[in-house]
Image (cartoon, rainbow, N blue to C red; front, side, top):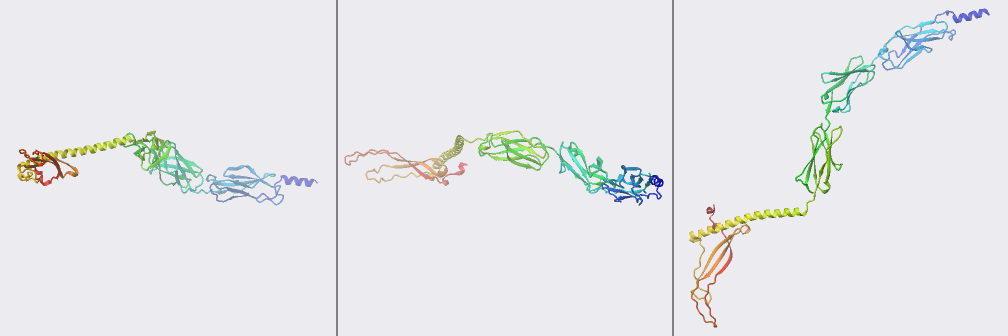
Length: 440
């Protein structure tokens, strides 16, 4: 009985006849990659006799630093992610609970693999590689792949003026320009490095646009008071602002038309006026930031009344009459000159004088032979127009008075009398009868 008690005490407190084996540390994967997990296992071959008596606790170390929160009953340690700084010498220990026996593994060097950065690119926010003057501009530098801490750099201009640098464990980094100005319109690029050397992005050009000013709306019409049927031009123009600019024309706050100015400047809207076009007009200009509105312009369209038409007609008639009156006056002057000309030619040239008929015998039985008749012609007027080839003349027909003769016929007393007759006859005036050299 006493012997059994001594054996039990010895089993609990005495050193085992065979020492504990050395544990072996294993890593999975053996070549871990940054950002990925890693499992550490402290393998140990326990004694076959009474393993519950020799059950140890496990400790894990990197270099001289204990990993985890202390001793572990499990021979495994799970690390969610390892980084390049986690590279080093790893080892483990196993300690028995009853005998205080400690066994230490050999040290194993573990190098955490780092993936170099690749496919570096630079983008902007807002997108489109442009910004409105005074707005915020964000330069976004990103990499498609790369592990560990990455240092990002931003450069301005093709010569590479360094703007900023930022180190973080991320594939994307941002640099912000709080209030962009015209001087910030430049070329930009970025670089990224995680220990394998910097990798550069391509160059991008940033455009800084100026916001539009309040546009000015003007109305161009052919008269001070436009009427129905007139065509007016409404011109809208923002004196400041980067193109392209979109203009919209409003009639009583309802969009009437719109037009774009790709190269800047203003646009014109032509309206053929009706009564409905009367009212208030305005326009706005927008080049991507905030639309700016012009001041209101009022257009009053009137309907022409009948009096205006009568005045127009009478004015036309008066003008025509004035023209015809001038022609008629010139014709009368020419007629008078022609009359004097013909008179002078009649006196100077007997051949052109009007013929004076000789005394003729009367054809009437009761007419005395001693009565002589004469006929004279006189040009009095020349008429222009369709009758410019006609001359009106006065014809004088006279009889020479003789002593009265009494003729007894049925008891009637007949005596000769002077009978002046005036005739009006239309004759053609031959152009050949006028001497134009004298007229000149």
